[in-house]
Amino acid sequence: MSRKPQKPVIPPGKPKSRPKATPAPAGWLQRYFDRITHKSTPIVPVENVIGRALVLVTAIMCFLACLALGTAWAVHRASVAWTSEAASELTLQIKPVEGLNMTDEVTKAMRHLGNVNGVVRAEPISNEETRKLLEPWLGAELNFEELPVPQLITVEIDRRNPPNLQVLASDLIAIVPGARLDDHRVWQNQVRSAANWIKWTSFLVLILMLGATIAIIVFATQGAMSSNRDVVNVLHLVGARDKFIVREFERHFLVLGLKGGLAGGLLAATAFIVARYALEQIAPRSLDGEFNNLIHAVSIGWSGFAAIAGIVAFLAILTSRTSRYTVYRYLKSVE
Amino acid sequence: MIRFENVGLRYGMGPEILRNISFHVAPGSFHFLTGPSGAGKTTLLRLLFMALKPTRGLVNLFGQDVASLSSTDLPELRRKVGVVFQDFRLLNHLTTFENVALPLRATEQPEQDYRANVVELLKWVGLGDRMRASPEVLSGGEKQRAAIARAVVGQPQLLLADEPTGNVDPSMAKRLLGLFEELNKLGTTVIIATHDVELMRLSDAPHMILEDGHLGIES
Figure 1 (cartoon, rainbow over the protein chains, first blue to last red):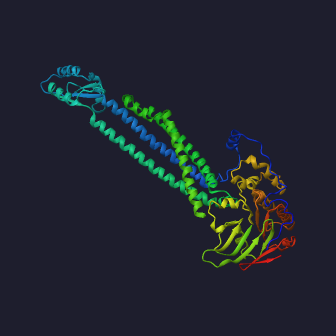
Figure 2: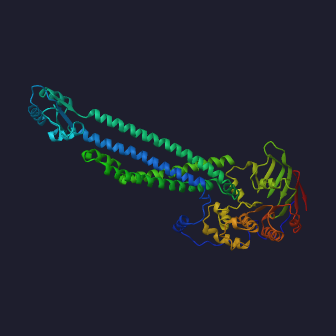
């Protein structure tokens, strides 16, 4: 059933007429340079519908992830700025009491505050400032003689050495019957809980988006494997190891993830810059302080750009690692 | 090199496509595998390049029992086998050069190590001026030669060809047969599956005749 070769002068599989070319000696640096600059066509076809769809989806997911994280970060920064400002400031309200002179009451309160350790500064709010504060509700023609408007005193405290606020409040009530000390604790708690709610909602949205992204990448990889079944078969038949095939697909998906991530990241950075500009334009003069906090919170700065770059890198790595796992599973299933 | 003993193969719960196939192929030999359409030639070739495992019997390739091979052993063994498919199976998004060099690229050799060899091989099969062309623009004969070049570029010990002259005219078929004979003279074992009687007349190689799932030999 077999036939001897006519001229078995060389071992099988060692063609004599095709001598092996002697490669030029190359150092590791040259080899590395050749590897990163080689222009061979990728084994996995680059341009296809699935690839384009995955780039689009990754871009959208990256944009939304940056927005979710950016929102959480901005809210956190704004709430910290607002509450830290509020924590170092108290408001003493002196209500008009029948038979008592308001000027005397203010003087008594100021004298007491001046003697309390931990109080850095106390300053009554002038009638002019009070009129401005009440203007949106009571109009510009406010007459203090006709309307019993409480007198407000802003008190700045030393946050490192604060006075005992309960003792201070009770002492002030004893001295000035119409006094009420507001340490803004209720407002601070409301701001904190609202900020926490927004932060955790943002994180939940982020986790859901990551889950959706992973699911989309798995489907896209499976689709790519199906549409490149011929490529995989040919690679198997020419003796390619699974590791090699997986690496080719992983590289392909890493590039797709990077493309989508960069597009989404750039869009998100642009959105933050535009949001800051828009806030600067609409900020009313009367609320400069609060809006400055908000504008500062929305400003992404270098740390924000670094965070966006981190999200882009994370999504690209997530894309390549998910596709790697999916390709391995596919190759195991076709063995 | 190749030893089949009482090999049988069926797809799923269907009838046996191959029945009690037994033969032995020595290194450096040249064979035609022939038979009517649907006789199981392609299935036998798929057993030979380890795309299928037999339902029963022993298939021993290069001294190893195929049934006992793990998936990690297969690539190493497949590199000893070059296959020319009837439909070429060239990848259209790669150039002719890249298609031919694919088995070497799959072994993760740097391109500079094999470039000169591949170029020389392409010239040898008459595709020296078509290296950068996509397979889509190659003629049937050129595709066939590119497929042959890809099959032999890794210097396999066994070359399998499925209907290699099915898409070319008689003169090209003769040239391709000459190419296979030249490779065989250089030491490669060659098995060509064909039902081209004219082609087989041009060579005195023995015929493995597959009919109704059984294999017969005609010297």
